[in-house]
Image 1: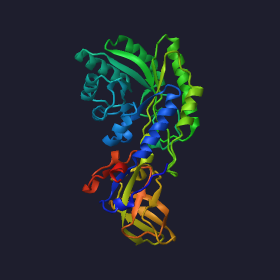
Image 2: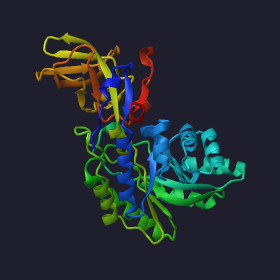
Image 3: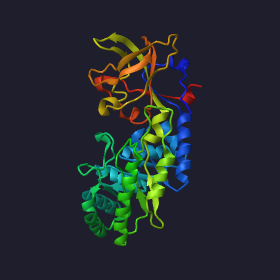
Image 4: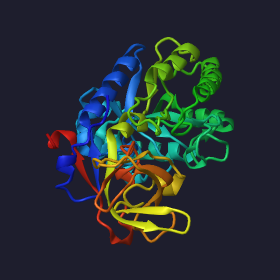
Length: 385
């Protein structure tokens, strides 16, 4: 399925804005649901990828759970129809306020990332007269082979409990009366495109679950997090859900009664979203041409922050087939405000519309008001028909 841009409608709108093709989103969700249900896997959508309420209401309608990293995300998930009993709460720095509210909301569990966090959750649960369900987030020291800013499972990462602390965590849990351990959790990074990484993760998880089993510790949930990457070069390609789930089916050993949970984010929403911008100026440099557009790193920070690639298209109908290379840049007073260098585009003019593709994940949700710019707004395919 290919994204269709209603250019006639876009010409009437102020730019920049995020355009979401909801048919692409629904198609992605259908594939995700069908492939995960083959094996009885449980899905929690990661709100950090995109927490737009319109998208969340569609995602929750498929019966998926939510993976949240703040109380505000939990509150947003609840308001958009997610069942609290399918919500998990992760993050290395949960505040007392957030923990208290999450307990009162009756979420499925906390993914705990430090020994001290266990003590804090236990104390707050005791004060409320509640029992907290927790999963230990374990750092398995698996190399995700992704950008170092989005790799989360190496030994020097701030995320998770290191393997050498697992036994201490288990001993601590025995003395905490307001906590029940229901599982273990892993998340090794984001935008992972090598299936071998997930094979390595399965091997490490098998070792860890065997350790728990040898100590007669019953784990109901094995949560392997998210991380499945997308094809940024071909934005009309869906993620490889079938291959991804089959790796875990083949290699991960579950004990009787155990559930396998996943937390996809980027792979769910990235391909349905594009950042739409307008060309302000064409400028000659000494060695290149610049296409200066009205979207900037405040609207989509990934290229500046991660040196990330996004396919850039001129979507204004062209009368000429001349191809020219441009550095596509924004208006922000930072040299890093560049979306792509030496980008092949048809001869581009002031006023042409530019689509920056695969921007549905970590785009709108990371926007800022640096330079006192307005935040980008959202347009949905069903609003333009």
